Image (tube, rainbow, N blue to C red; front, side):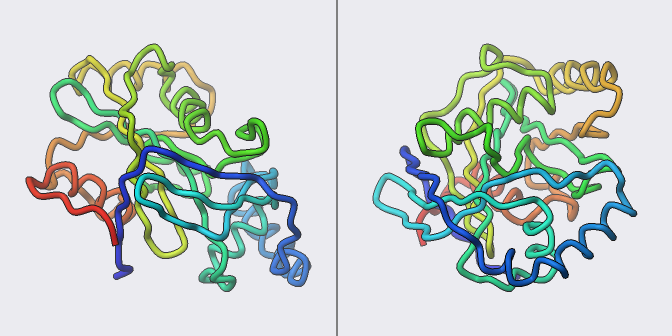
Length: 239
């Protein structure tokens, strides 16, 4: 199992820098063929522009990294082929919706998505719409993903001041707790009603986690590690 580290920070410095990814250019033909096969399996996926990262640095109170633009096809191949370029990581934000009864709300990805069946918090690899003043606006990215996946706006929750950066392999999940003054079952019903109004929702089910006994194998390790830390009486942060 990949070792996990959780760093609690209050600042994110995520500058976007012009850079050409050698993996994407040198293996372009293989990447195109791989993506064509994925599209035959799931015609809804498309090759949009996204942001990946390199040069991660944790300080006493912050996290910084340099982001660069690439395409989804290159990211998918890099992920599916076991992360051949170890200098790159996927740094993304997650909104951990926490209800007033302590339940966390997670969504299950629909079968038409690239991560079908996986269960986690609203999230997404940042893209060009998340750039503000030359940097990735991770808070804005999280707010956008929460709105797209659940229908909740920033007026529906109160964000904690800190981020828990969960490092797992070639991923850094920047997770922020979003407190909702609603019980878990009521919020699940509200989100399910929103999904029912969508023609092709990204999520196919909503799950509540009230303690570690609700964790499942469909949840990525960075999600379960974060939740375990929230329910632990002695959470450990750092290396």
